[in-house]
Image (cartoon, rainbow, N blue to C red; front, side):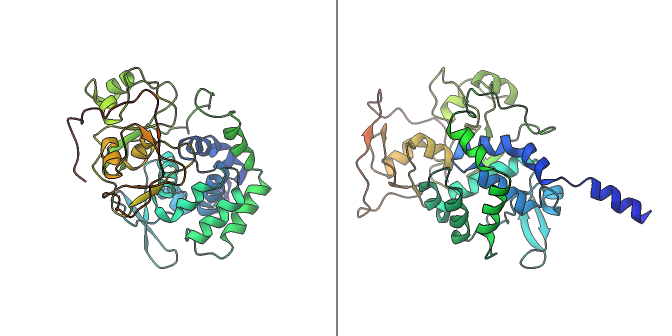
Length: 320
């Protein structure tokens, strides 16, 4: 009986190839949404979760070994560097992938990674090790080896050459995965899927007619792209503690920064002393929780076409 149990359990383990085939589309979706290379996401998932077979992955849906830190959601305890350490626990694998991307985007110690080219997987791997993502001295080399042995950089090329993204069929979601309602800066949000519209989401999520437009600074008639963050509650006046500033990436807009951190767009312009509708240059430091200090240098922004003045304040807000 013991031999049979061991054999059956061993047969149920996911191979690395199966893991990559299952989650490559999800990794590319996250690359489109946040800029984190799909190759890096997949390599970290393979390494951190033992190809989806670790206890953290099977019991906690945690595929990236992210510990609790300031986490207020569900938790799972596991022996790692120390005994009985606290790790984040998710309802779905999709939540784990989304939280992994958001973790890298919103933590200031990883900001320099987003100044690298998206296909520079070696730079990303070494940058993750330098920023302290893992304690292993071989962490960067392990990621690079996984990427090159499995040709994961092909998924980066698919995104960068337009073979994967908004308007391109992405195939089915992870089997059995329901739509996840996530939380950022204590605000509930979802990730838009192919075919979503504001009216359809309003009916599905039982919202008032104008809420999606108001909460997300969207014009009526706006098309929702797959992978877009859609807040279900008003954004707050400041980012959560620990996210003091954000370094602007290439072609990144103030609206995108507002969505990443869950901070009201009007407020971001005001505390950075920027004219509403202007856009910051790449490398500009945007303040997220308090007014930009007088001695902080802000590069001259370019006006956004068709925007002349600040719209009226939203009726509802959460004080952060």
